[in-house]
Every structure is written in structure tokens, then in C-alpha cells.
Length: 316
Ligand SMILES: C[S@@+](CC[C@H](N)C(=O)[O-])C[C@H]1O[C@@H](n2cnc3c(N)ncnc32)[C@H](O)[C@@H]1O
Ligand SMILES: [Zn+2]
Image (cartoon, rainbow, N blue to C red; front, side, top):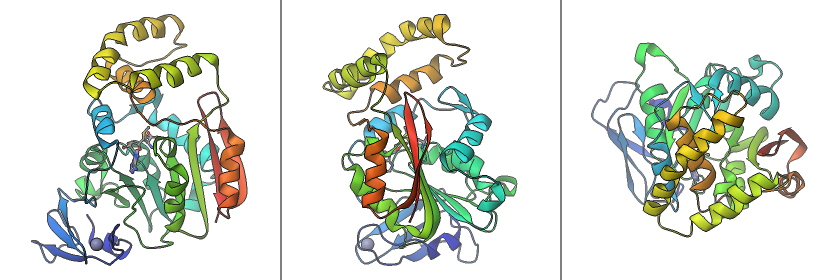
């Protein structure tokens, strides 16, 4: 963790600023230490601030999913470079990456940090902070973060383990907040959305991507009804079922996959994403636009939309 991150952090539960207690006093980098506030003490481990005072609901499901991830180049059957392009143009609606220079950006629910790492190179002079409650953020931190400073790469990139519903940031510190594939997995989506808004500056931009309710019958049968049935069972059983279904999904991919390049491990991770999680809501784009508007956002626009999901962007 870079010491400069302390300037934007606060305790997610009592709202007080942190006092840092670290072994190496003079370095700008904290590898091991404690962040102390009015209510608690949090560890910084291997450069990662762990700002949770209890295990958030559903964290275990995500830990299970991300334990399958080891690839830094591909995710969701997409090459990360292609994904970066989609993210910038169709979700964040950035015309020129120079717009991101000097900006502070929050990637809320960053998973293994692949896309955070890609976008962080554009916010020189500012910073990109990836937050996730799951163990995926440890992967992100150890592979991409500035806290390790491998060959001084990704100096603008920071990771924090925290819950989106209790974000550890001061009010209005980010110029831009984005959250891809996350809010529909949180029980109280609107409360989580408000939590993101609190950390966004006035006139800052927020962009989210969520699952589409306006989708195909195939998605409804599998990702809505079958998932609901499966998640009735304990995690251990769900894992067994998905593992035994993997060969079927791989055969389907080789017959109808339209050039899909997922190997068995990547495919299994993708299947977990679609079928393993208890909370996976779907929205009509109009519902999300209404949510943005009743929370005071202006210039609300729907971006990329397909049967899987859509993005919505607005200005605070
Ligand atoms: C489908 S993944 C999306 C990851 C990444 N944004 C992407 O597009 O690849 C959803 C992520 O949201 C995280 N998440 C879900 N609920 C969360 C919460 N309440 N606080 C923080 N992270 C959360 C999960 O741990 C998981 O990594
Ligand atoms: Zn506190």
C-alpha cells in the first residue's frame, strides 16, 4: 500500500481517519502494518489493506469462484485488450484516454484486477483503486499493484479488500466510479449504488454494467431457473454438480461456440459465474435508468446492451 492512499481512506464502519502503524517508517510503501481508527484495527498484509471487520455475506461463493482463476490475459472468454477497448468506449464512454489523466477512479468489485490494471495506465498523476471483498483482490494485489512495485509498473494502481456496502473512502474522492458485473449480486443493489455515489465527486461520472432481464429463453432457463434451483443446495454440492456438467458445456462450446477459446478451467470459472451465486438479479435497462435518475444523476445514458447485460452511465 502506498502511504498516499491514506489521504483518501477512512474507516468503513466508524468513518474516522486512520492512523498508520508500520514497521518501515520511512518508506512511501507499507508492506506490513496496521490501520487504526476509533473502532478497530485493520491489517495491511503484503501491501494490501484488509478493511473488513467481519466476513461479508456471499464472500465464500466468490472465493470459491476466483480460486479457479490464474490467467492474467483472458477473462469471460475475451482477450483483455479487446475488453479494455469495450470498457472504455461502450461502458465508460471515454472518447479519448487523455480524459483520464490525473483522475482518481474506483473499480468497485474489481475481481482479479485485470481490467483495473489495464485502465490504470491512463490515470497517471491520479490513481485507480480496485476494491473487492473476495480473495480475488489478493490475486490482483500480488500480480498488478503498485504496492509491490515490480519494475515500478502500475504506479497508479492500488487495491483494497473491502465491502462495497461499507466503502473505506472519504466522501467525493473519485472522479469516476465504475462497477462491472457486481451490483446485481448484492442483496440491496440500490443501497450499494448509493454507497458508490457517496465516494463520487460532484459532476463525477458513474458507470455500471448489470445483467439484462430482457434476454433469451436459453438464458432464462439456465441462468435464472436452473441457478435458482442449484443455489438451494450447499456450496459443496453445487461445486460437484458444476464440475460434472463441465464436459457437456465443453462439447456445446466446441459445436456452437462461435470461435470461443476457453479451456476447461476458464470455462468452469465462467460456469460458476453464471450458475453458482445465490444472488444474481436481472434488470430492464429502464429500471436502472430510473434508479440513476431518482438518485439525482444527470445525463443518464444506456451504453453497450446485449442479451447478457447492459451498461448505464450518469453524471452526479
Ligand atoms: C462477476 S465478478 C466481476 C469482476 C470484475 N468487475 C469483472 O468485470 O470481471 C463480481 C465481483 O464482485 C465482487 N463483489 C460482490 N459483492 C461485493 C461486495 N458487497 N463488496 C465488494 N465486492 C463484491 C465479487 O467478489 C466479485 O469479484
Ligand atoms: Zn473505525
